[in-house]
Length: 265
Image 1 (tube, helix red, strand yellow):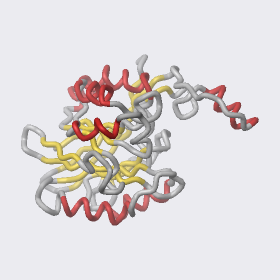
Image 2: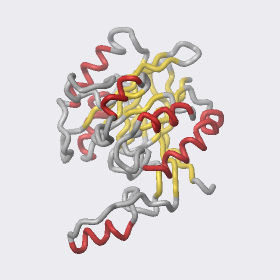
Image 3: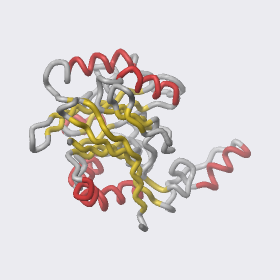
Image 4: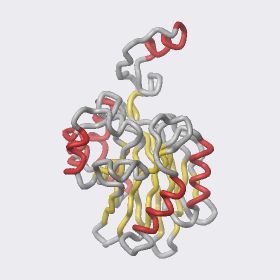
């Protein structure tokens, strides 16, 4: 059995710290072959930096995916190309810097392709069609014999778009896992043809918050509409992730489960 953990959107220092503290423990406890994490909110809630990416990779994360905040940090566009285990959304224009997928290999030689498709509903950054893009990426990786299976992240706002992607790729991807909305959903499952699915893996960061930000300024903005600075919150820090078991002989996933780890036990 091949086991991998996909960690939901890492938000700010609280999210980074719990991943660094827990990655090795989670690998040992669950006998993980791969740990993948979405890091697009890792730098103060918006984007990522080279230093942060190297810190997460050094702590035991095998690959980092990104989303619509991919270019938020100044200078990241010149750093991403030097990080071979970090990938931007695959359906951004081909002229964008950085890799559009990563292929990880475990000690037994099993190769897992990892890539992200950016949704197009209610998201400001527009990419090419994520459905056709997924078809093309699967053809380039698994179909071309470069990988044995694929983990597809659908970074999208609309639950309908995420669910549609799961059904679109059922039986063709090892997993289709949603990110972006920061709230874990209660629908972790293995679809009929063997694809692990979860609409949103949730946030890794402070849950005593509004999507990782301090409550008072966000609430105030909703009430009076006045601009405020949304700082990263600090309370109730959790790591939220999807745990997937994949049978490489049957070529299908057999388990998809939400894993939650709290900073204080």
